[in-house]
Figure (tube, rainbow, N blue to C red):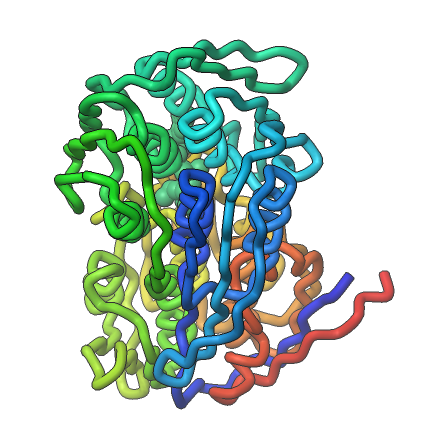
Length: 430
Ligand code: UD1
């Protein structure tokens, strides 16, 4: 197992290339199950979660191959070809699903294409219970028979899926994606109301429409999907990763540095950008991305609340807490999406951060100094928050269990080292 070692204190400066979005790639890869023609995806990041999804799709019968690399303004993304000529297995086993909750996204397209699926329940995870009721109830509305037995979802739709009106009682990114993936081949029209509006959903909709789907209402909470009998293959470039961009924006901010995030799109993280500006960070569009500069300004404490898009993303909450730990004043960070997403807090406290948890909120009092310490990563974004704190902590910080980081950040230590951080990956002998 690897660990990351950081000596904090260097203001970062230079350019970081932002890769393709993990959270957009995963549902888009599942779209390959809907056609027997090849789906060629560009700008796919090289991450553990992408490999898990590729393995899952392969065992359903998708031929997955690496077609090479595309050069996107200096960022080298991967080009994947996915071809599901035949679906020869409709079971998603526990061993793969437990590694990554997004595996549940094969359920909708398997039902649409093969009329049946058996998918392991993903179970809870470090950030909360994370049920899948919204996915299952939506698919039932489209006509699926669903039961849960021995930890597996058994779903079938002998007469094929039929369009329906689905009003989500709660906004869910994954349930919206699963229902879109299921309904594009359903008979008739499906209307999704109170759907999630995350940019990753737009990426999925754009890809499906270029495969011949008929989806209207992109970027709104109301999607109308007119089912088509067949989809074709296509070429699609995955959008840039807005959470990776936000994380490196915070790296520039916390170290008092200046980084150009090449390939990042300001509009995708506008609410995080608004918050960072209020905290005293200068952020502008640059020729090829976003320029983040705190080389000459004081870091101020501000309050934030996580919300579905376009609100402040929960996937940047942990990183923001690290930032506020180094700010001037007291900040209240309210988490409204996941019930248990503060696993990073006890680890940050070990580095000298002054944080009190109060139900779903963290009260973060800025401190003049964080100190390096051995810390343990608990989930993907929590790991990133520990690295960020390590960048300004006095002395050595060692982050263990970084397999969490490798799920969502490509070559994180190389990217940070290239802008001046003293950071290396080591083999963990523990
Ligand atoms: C996706 C993202 C994840 C991000 C999250 C919220 C991917 C692969 N993951 O996760 O990084 O943190 O959106 O922006 O894109 N819920 C239910 N029932 C359900 C489904 C969800 O109650 O059937 C609840 C969840 O427990 C959570 C909330 O709805 O409290 C939002 O979850 P959801 O948007 O579904 O998150 P994911 O799609 O799992």
